[in-house]
Image (tube, rainbow, N blue to C red; front, side, top):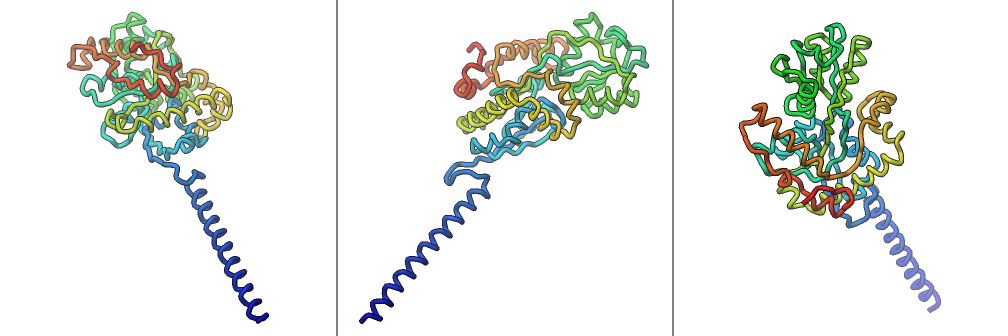
Length: 347
């Protein structure tokens, strides 16, 4: 009887030990699984989002920092960033549904507003009064804006640089018809002015600095204080916004955290972007203060787009004759909930 009792107790203990061991193994597997999926808590929704940006520009810096610091993942977003030659091309990718969201300056929004109304901007992520610049070759006897008359100039049609160029001409009392303008992509412009195929370019950073570095003492900047504030904005198709209003808010919360990080960690922010662009840290550091990285939807954005629409109509860049109502191209609700103080549009 004693031996039988001992055997039964031993069997019970063995079964209990095996049960505990099994539960520990299951727990280890669950924890390992969570780590493999980015450290997210079990049950937390992860949404895949694609975002198109201008690949060589500083303007999407807030987006790159939000991804590098893990702020999108914190909001349950697996963000895939896709590079395009310009913001104009990123917007085209949005409209073709190649990406869910795009980053684009105000001018391409205006040109597309003449032909379609199925997209909206839902936040500005940066603005700058020194984004677009005019660079010329000194050996072509160019020292003042008026020296551009009769010269060959390159810009990218339908972009902020194009609008800035025409404002520059008007501001300096010049006749645009007396100037030969070529439509080139940013990288093509750098090659064109370096090779002497054109005399001057109207472009943005870091392309301007690349050309300047190669030209050296043969590069001359022309005065560019013409009162134009360029913006870079988040845009999406209306159906994507309507079907994903909470997702849009989560994107903005991640970017709001990136904005705060940029303000509090300037050097690390510059380092992140320099590495991303494969650019010299010192050069990015020099350019950094030309940009105000912040979330906003301001009344000035509407005014700028209206001015650009009138410019496009006057210069026959569109066959339309009326300025669209740009309130119809702004989705305010998400930013108004996430950062109400960032919204100053009258609506």
